[in-house]
Image (cartoon, rainbow, N blue to C red; front, side, top):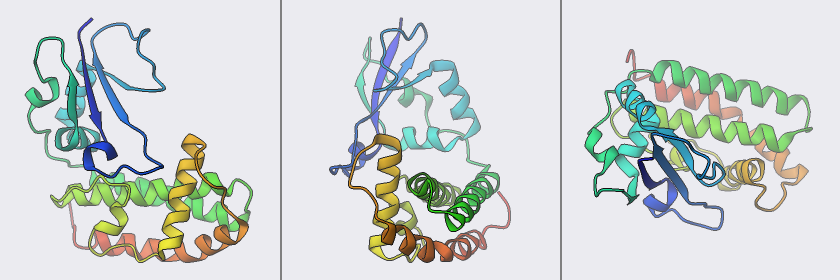
Length: 208
C-alpha cells in the first residue's frame, strides 16, 4: 500500500497551546486497517484529487499549510498536485454556516440543556464562515481565531470567544474546564451581533 503522511492545522501555523492536538493526514490507496482513524484523517488519493479539482477549502488548507512527514519514495503527493482550483462555493458554504449559527443560537435561547453542544456548533459556524469568506476574497485564514482575523473582525468580548472555543474543545475532545451557567448566559447575549457581522462580511461580495 502506498501512503503519504502529512501534518496540518495549528501545529503548522505555530498556534500550539494546551488545547491543541496534532492533525495528521494519511493519504492512501489501499486498506486502512493499520491506520488509527482516531489519530489520522484518512483520505484516498483519488478523493484528494477530487477535492483539489473542486477548489474545496480543505484542499486549500492542505495546500497552504500542510507539511510532509513521510513519503515511501521521496515524492510529495500534495505538493505535486499544485494549487487547487479556484474556490467558487463561498455563497453556498457561508449560507450553510449562517444557518447552523441561527439554528444553534435559537436552541440555546430556548434552553440551556445541551448548551456546550450548541456553543460548540456556534463556534464551528463562525469560524468556518470566516474561513470560507477569507478564502473567497483571496486571503485565506484557517486559524481557529479566523473570526477575529478577518476584516471587519467579530467584535466579541475575549471571554465570550474563549467560552466558545472551550465549548468546542469540550464537545469534540472532552478537554478543558466546564462552562458555567453565567458564561452560557453571557455568550448567548453577546453572540446576538453575529448575523449582522456575517451580513457585513458578505456585503462586499456580489457573486462567486
